[in-house]
Image (cartoon, rainbow, N blue to C red):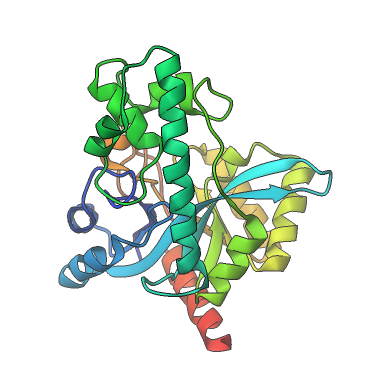
Length: 290
């Protein structure tokens, strides 16, 4: 099945509503989609209704930013995709509010830093840019763009908001193990998103992957616009050797990430047609055991 397993809407930092997003998926000729907004499930119901109307197979989920302490004691930041997480109460669902509260605590601190750096920006400016409940750095970046200080989000992140940037502030995170265990307890499965952003390679990457696989990780997002063709093939091979699913997705955010198109990323992305079905099967397996 042609599908895109990594999409964002206005429920977090995308620029298309969940309903409009499913229409874009249909226009792209895809038959499967997964909505993975950051720290929220608030767009799932609308996306599911639209996907049902359009005969698109749909997987609900969310994207989490987590920490992992490797065997050598170094701290690794990982983005993790939790698939099969439904709106409502549950072990992970109830933690999402705690994570969003962490965002709410961090945002004013970032704005204060920006003001100290000479940027005329307020929380009201940020709220004007946000369409959902998971308000964070992308919306702060959008507010700066709207004021004419930068041309796009990427420029703001590169100059100010990325880790270590002049206006960066840490926030609450789950550990990778917590995210995997809470997802499983909530009927879902986890995949490492765009592994290149972990910043580790070689033996250390394999060691971390093996640690998380033993905890319950089911896959890695081998096919992502940040990965060149050689890396996609390498990661797919690693996934196969370790019994993990090599998934893929465009990480589409609408105009929030220019050049990332649904289904094809920057034009050369090809999500394996087996990925959607294998994630669905992994979700079914978790729920069958519970």
